[in-house]
Image (tube, rainbow over all chains, first blue to last red; front, side, top):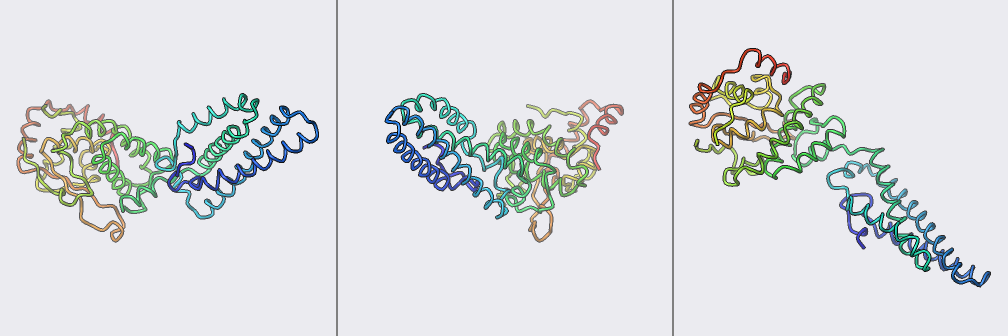
Length: 242
Length: 108
């Protein structure tokens, strides 16, 4: 199943825990409901439909509960920094599409009596997306921490506000790897060297010129590429003038 | 393709030419040119690609020093001469244009 893939250090990474228990709960509810209704009313079709609805919603509620517990544990472990724009997300739009499709197939599946499966999955997925969205709104990712860890730079170098951090991360993705690292290093250096009051303006300036860096990074011949900050062998080499 | 000599490029070259043997890092360049590091970064990349300028990353332990490693820029062996020639043939920016640039890109 597409949505049961691992998602890095995201709190939703333990999807076995997230998906299986709600299913078990939903399935048990479904069995109990269908048994109860069949013995009481004798109308199998109506019973199956009702059971599917109950099973689906129970599974969905169970998934909400599991997600809430998971999020709470995650928060208490102070791992908010890993949930963000760079590597926290799973399938993104694809997952939304899957959810949408799940919700679309809900009514027909419901009426043929197997709606529990798709409906529960759709609700689980929807619950997961809503919870993630709320969590990320409530706790924006401090992208600076990830940057500092990645570059080995000082933790004093911070991106002020998550919006700039996200925009910087987004813009850097448009660059070739060599130039991307160097551009991010340059931002770190700048933010360390200038007063915090100037950081917003400086970051805006970096973002304005990000397109030029991206274009340069992809148009530069690999043989003449800019030395990477990660490769000591390339440091300090003079290039012959043309 | 010849290097496009924008006003910003000229300012960066002039800053480096004041003492061609001297290495400048981001903040120093910003102070010398009046441009922000975000503006000078792509210019320096272009100059490096053209072989006029070279750079090296400071060899320090960022954790020990408490700051990220700086990247220092200086002219290559033939870079200064090429830059001087290019600046000489380039249209000199007017004082008004320089004032506008300083107003837009002024930093610390």
